[in-house]
Length: 101
Image 1 (cartoon, one colour):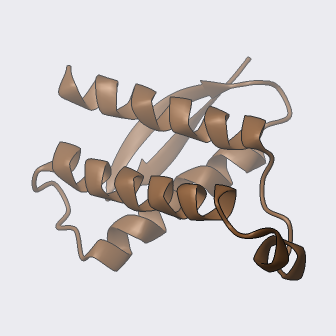
Image 2 (cartoon, helix red, strand yellow):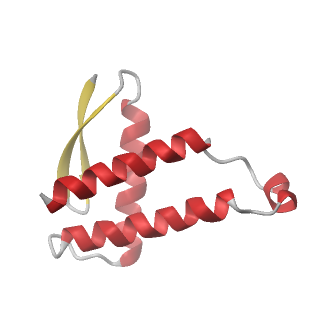
Image 3 (cartoon, helix red, strand yellow):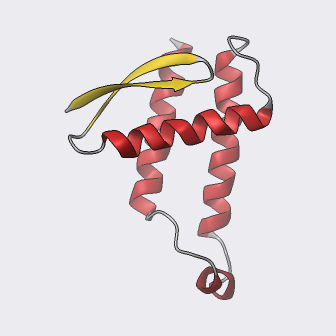
């Protein structure tokens, strides 16, 4: 296991990940941080709510990818595997649980 620090919404979060997955998890953290920036989320102001909205938007994107028509899916580049998406969702839930105390 490796430990790393993700900076999301102006705050540092310490997370553990499998050895060799550091850059992948860091990239996932950057995606969440970018989503928060798109929302215009204020740093330090109601972090849980901001992360919830970011997670909902990301979950909506995942949902759309999963439910695309076969024609649209064939034309679009392939996305992450369902297992990877479930791992992302689990990590987001862990962050939300941590924030809620």
